[in-house]
Image (cartoon, rainbow, N blue to C red):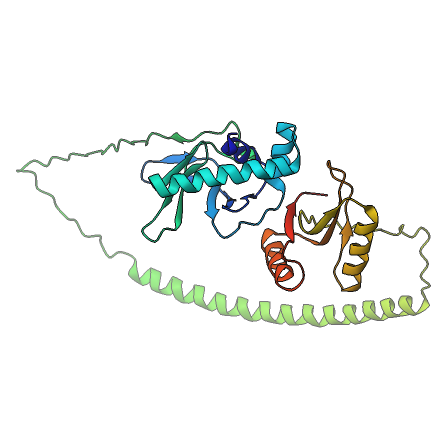
Length: 312
């Protein structure tokens, strides 16, 4: 069984793909990039990372393999365990394992797993058809205009001063203009004061009429607007902490009632493809919140609780 092919298929659809007993591959969306050095443009993509501490079986990979291989869930879990053993042996012997279309796993000096993702393919479905490209730089030619002026050596430049004619006339004209300006300013000031006084009288009369109309008025709405009903969009919660999946519906109902009495927002899900009746502790909008709740439940309630990632 080529396990990395099934992991690649799930990375297109889910944020986290867990390999039971080994670790989990996580994805994070990176926006479009522009590299100034080579003037390259790169489309949005999913960045893949590896977390060796997320080893619990969430059922996602095993169910996917069971559907594609036409086998049972238990058989798929056994196949995954066999493949994990091969990976661990290869890491011990060769210090590295190459996963097609995903990346390379290797051991550092402290015997911890280090993951190096491959650049291709792009697991972000919204970027299908988009490829990176290098834009050629634009070189602009600067044209400098040089103006040449030639002056003959023997040419003589003469400066002729203006004659001081009519200075007395200009002096008297300035005095007359200044006098007229002072007179005009005083006249405008008197006119403005008169207009302001009359405007104040008119405004008082208008305000009195408005007050009289308000006191006499009776308000009546002939055609009121219809009532508006606001619909609040329900927040998506694709992350669920599973308490267990039961063969008998009576057992599932008992666990559901027990969790509800303890204060959990428990739910019963529809039977899965194997005829089991799942019961969940609750649903969460983000992976971080669900992961935190799963750790707390495993410590205090149920060590076998696992995470289901699915939009119900």
